[in-house]
Amino acid sequence: MAAAAAEVGRGEEAGAEQDAETTAVSKRRGRFLDIMPRGGRESLLKPMLRCESLAKSYRSGGRELTVLKNITFLLESGGFLAIAGPSGSGKTTLLGLLAGLDRPTAGRVVLDGQDLTELDEDQRSLLRGQKVGFVFQSFQLISTLTARENVQVPLELRGEEAEQRADELLERVGLAGRGHHYPAQLSGGEQQRVALARAFSHRPRILFADEPTGNLDAATGASVIDLMVELNRELATTLVLVTHDPDLASRAHRVLRLRDGAVVADTTS
Ligand code: ADP
Ligand code: MG
Image (cartoon, rainbow, N blue to C red; front, side, top):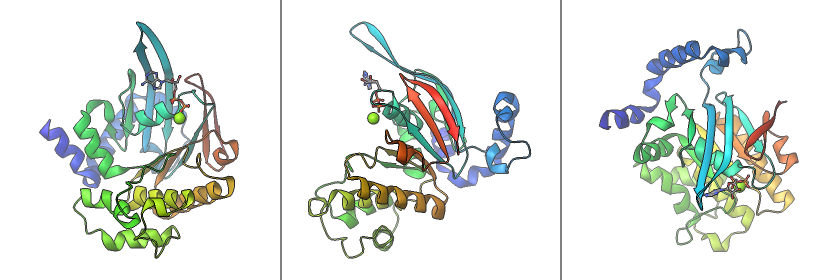
């Protein structure tokens, strides 16, 4: 277990072994190569996210409720995927599995070369701290901390010098000079910008956002998405956005549409 944790902790340095591992996996799973362009970029052979035959069901009142069934896709590093579908179609459940917040009933998720189903909860938590950013519909800022302190949290968890980076990020999201304000002193759009700055603060490889504009008016929501797209480009962060808004989904390079827990459309623009 300690060895596995150390494995996760090596982060970027694990690159060489990961290349070999990914190539071996790609060879074993030839069907995945079939859906990649011939002579495609190296990055396509090293997906940021690999989701294989993923299923999730819950047992309640003696009955089994299937929430997700047979979800399979690859997302390349730096890509922008939207997951769309009506309320109750399984979007949040899928995002939780992809981000390692929850465990699947069947199938597996490989995030940046690491099979999440091989990790226990502590190891997944460690991996999230190193590689994953998360933005929620309800912002989820800590109300007793200022904007600057909220942005600093993920950095301090890693023992990093945080104040300067927090101020740079707040400036980047258009909130220079607001770092000393508490969440209650900020509008919804401003709070979500703070949440975005927090999500990007530890330079995650991949950012998951669950209906991040759901509590915002259309114009403010669009500006939050603009900011996510800019940060996606600037920092080469892979982006996975859950939304039931078709306009927002159309901003992504690719849209996975869910209905009743299954993928009913997978479109690339
Ligand atoms: P969406 O985000 O697309 O609205 P969800 O992923 O939240 O959908 O939920 C999909 C389905 O899974 C819903 O029918 C929901 O009631 C059910 N569900 C989600 N979490 C649980 C749980 N912990 N136990 C039982 N059912 C759940
Ligand atoms: Mg949801």
